[in-house]
Image (cartoon, rainbow, N blue to C red; front, side):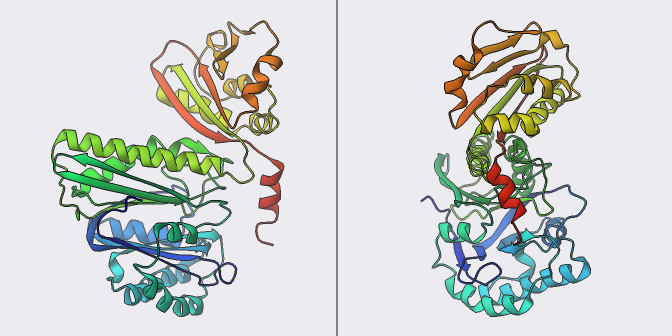
Length: 393
């Protein structure tokens, strides 16, 4: 695995979830790093989201992440904010990092206050584990209903030498982004300015993680945060280096985005919804999200049912500005609908093999405009209902 220079990992079982299961993790940089973040726009932002936004506002460098699963620390008021700050104080002593240089993130059930006794008890083990744990261990510690941990790493050459990127995330349900989704952490060993790193992260998130949906629900805890510590000694100064770093950051985030949809709660399909020919990108996105969030489209995907009329219907109520007769629909490259009518032929027979695949490409063209968008969407299954009906029990 390509682990960026200067980062160590930790993970331990704090009994926030089931006893003995990893649920508390940390990533620490050997030197303070340039930090960037993108966060949920939900009005009910969790305590760690508010804490991170406050800490990142002044542009100072950060030394790591403190992450827990099992409790979201959302909708917990002033007590939740105080508990969040106290966890940073506890972790600072265990990890030998200043408390105001640790960025917190939490995931789990909304509304419950932290059991601070469990936090205090877990800290010595977390500190002892720092540098012993692997990135896989830390990725496991942030899982909730995820069935697999999600990691992506890459190494590439710039003018000044080798640079490494590593990303991890968790997410399987309550996924429909607006500025970010789920929890995702990126570490890089390049030397880059804070302004350029933040701009690059926002740009790449909007082209990747912001283009997935599982169930249409945006979490209170959504965040994507990134550190760049410069430990490789490679500075991002030229436009060429910036473009290459951006390319690889986008590739990492696209890989993580796909893994989220592939691991959607109960999910069996990933739909690649491509929209083109719109008057604006915004109109294209309206169509893509209407189709990707439609329960009828999603259940048809689950049933491998080539019920293309549900796709047309969703596009029609999306609110996008287009003429019905201009819409052209292709599924798996097969022309299904154009000029206001279905294409002749046995579509059930033609589309049957395509609908049985894991990955299904749905292309919708709505005119001759320059606007386009892409969205990854999961199906909606009986297992999704069971998981979320029983989530707290």
